[in-house]
Length: 386
Image 1 (tube, rainbow, N blue to C red):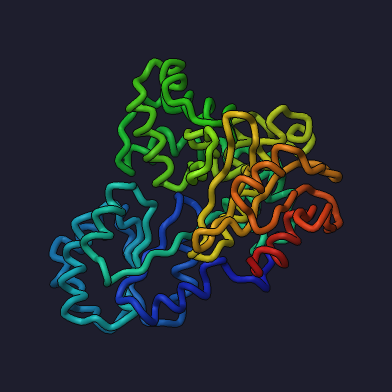
Image 2: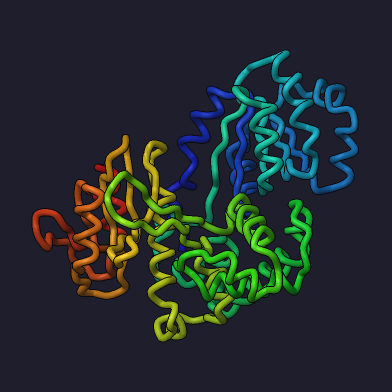
């Protein structure tokens, strides 16, 4: 169920941005609820909604300056802005002529190239917010959220089967249609295999050469796919933490499919029982916890992982102002233990405190430096204090 007492995670930031910037951009993957959110926020206001995926609305903007000059008293919502990248240059002139805040809301499923271009064109005129799939701050059933993922139509489906069917069709449509619309032209069969291989590698170090060899594509092509899917909010590429310490550190990033519902669909897991008995259980839980934490971080906190060639490892580091404020180990179990490798990683990174996040009910200190806890408690009580 959706916790209706809690608003979408960007609600407060969105209201602030609308009072500061002439344009506010809401970016995120397709089907995540951007249009619904924008219409709800603009409800009761004098607004104009245009869906740029439709030919009719694109034709209205054949002369954007003339068309929009008729609606200077309205907040204009431009949905799927990536279908008309030329609008960014037009909006620059319109905004410079009248810099009142809250004039435009731009919604996009962001291809990397378009977002880079828009950032340059509208620099100082737009503020961007990312709308993610549902998080634990927005819903009250962690098990369902983990299994089905946070895409609204998947999470809210009447049954696990209905959710699984929605996700299966979403993946097929995304690979067969949406990636091309977003600017990534590729062979459908290769991309389908690519996604399924990424699912089997959840939480592993990226070896682009081996991955390319398995798919009979080049390493640069693999990296182009990875970069694109990261920019389209489908993958999290977790970079390793570096510092001037006298140890050989792993330099490759770790790869996660961000939404665990999509991950489970690619792995053929439609029920909690199937998930709990699958070899990827730990990797799925690790990715889920990382995504929930990353989605609730303040802007000045960066995320990394740590691993040495000798085997010392930490699943997640939170760094703030150059200091590692939290070293986090993620384990699916009610009684997670503190391993030697984790303690070494804390010493190497000089972490302020260590946390073992399992799925038990209690929170307690293993010693003065390490706390054993669970995800809801970490998100609501510990993370806001870091």
